[in-house]
Length: 500
Image (spheres, rainbow, N blue to C red):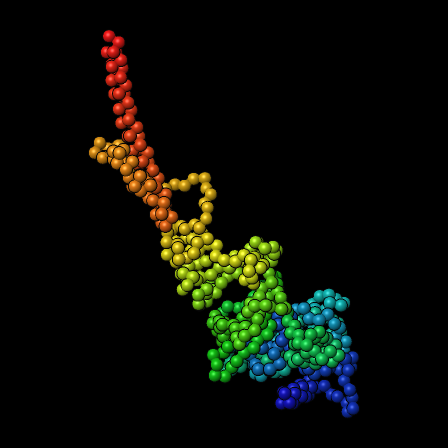
């Protein structure tokens, strides 16, 4: 830092001599008497603080344009882009402070080699004329530094028009160089504003880009257009406000912070400073600790007090019998028997390989006696579904431990029991049926009560067997009718014979 200030002091001294500014011994410069030095240049970092445009001949790219205001004095050359009166290069700086120059303001530029031969400097007078006024119009210039006293007004815009570059026997016509453009304005800025940190003497705050920082560290910048603060996705120039970076033997890692206007949002991006298409991972609290969004007291590793949206794949990873559950909580459901929390588990081992839905009331979440908690729905890994059933007993596509209430049940069957009506069907005689019932206490080909209790009923199979028994019963009734009809005829014939 000491070397930097020594460099500034030497440079400012040389500038003062070249401009032929004489300072009487013991004389203290003031804003109404004479110029300050480059520490009062209001154009430091003008491309980020004001609106800087390059029109006409494009002698510099955006990176070179910003270097004209960085205080480094490193020269930029047009290199093969001739500047001529027919095709001049115009640099305009807008939105400058609307503050009167008094009598101590100076405007100029410098180069190392190849000075502009013909140029014009104009300023927008916002106090009296409210239009462009010519500050300097120079032809046949050969000096590598140029400075001119600013007019007595408020200048809110500056325009530098370069009509002709340098021409020598060894240099192509129209080439020129520029190191720094400056506007020394004693009243419009603090020393080195836009170049060095600013400190609020009363509060001890530090500011970058502002003379009155209200926070301990304030970084102030300017966004010229809507969406100009959107993070860049390519190149090497980022649209951020602040950067933390690592150089040396690293790959150029950088952490950029920025803000955009219209729409308004702030952003953070970890990237490669030499290739913005290459992004790096961003880790928050890698050694532990909770992170909160919308809350100052996060109660979990990530605590979001508000809505969250995931536009692509979302994964919840875990291990063990219950994996990592997803809890859905409704804090309004506080009564016993109300599901205060639903939990979804990807389970294994003793719980069975399954996705299980459990619910808990307020009492059940603490596993106290009498609280509601337990498995309600199970989706087995093989596709079987259980409702209120233990995973060990879910052996069919749907297992329900409880009552099913529905309007209709449709069962697909491969065939009905109409084979009973086939002429080849052997109907068991009723005497044998009676004998079987007396022995087994159920109809032939029907399951016993103990079998149903153990294995349950197959609805389709049972419906078909009941149909079979109804059809057999129909055949028995038909046989009985035939027998009754025959007996009736015999009785009728006997009665006729007995009356003769």
